[in-house]
Length: 232
Image (cartoon, rainbow, N blue to C red; front, top):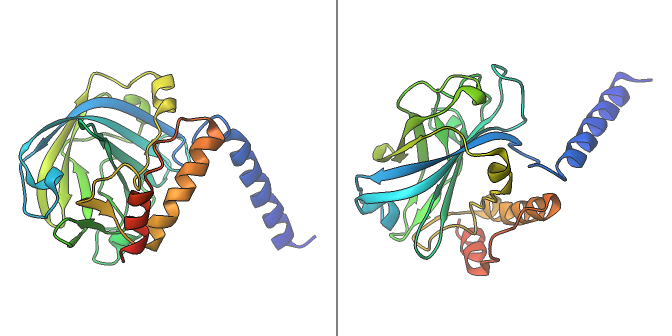
């Protein structure tokens, strides 16, 4: 039997196991911890109200591993910030990436959570500007999810810091974490949303994943999906 056939069978088996497991947990970023926190915005001039207007907002923070590798092993790590609002929540999903002009658009495995996270692709603001969102912890988080109980993370739009997320009090119960259903396409604002066809395709992927594992998906928000997919 050829090596390629064996490798293909192994990959198919691993994928099948992952799909079966995803009936009860996330297909991507299955291992994570969620926390209550606070976002303090200092302000900027991007054309997005969330970033430009100084203020404080309650948030839910999730720190995760993309493939669910063991502590200390490399993985594409994730940082999600859900900003709770009166009318809607806004989800910012960031992943570990490179730090160069081009590599920041590429997800990169990392061993430690003490690294840079980015939006990978651009967001469009109400001023019709494209901005790249990123974040970096202000203090060490380590490489073990179970050891993370609190932290501070600075958020940036382009090369300018606009706010800081502070979270603590220990991780939320596992059931609460499992019930969270994030959506970076539908949970957006007209003046701050991801842009481009790749981001647009994520709308279907997130919807299917949430229905598959039985998590309550967010509202359909067809306008949010359309403005993401149509803007390049």
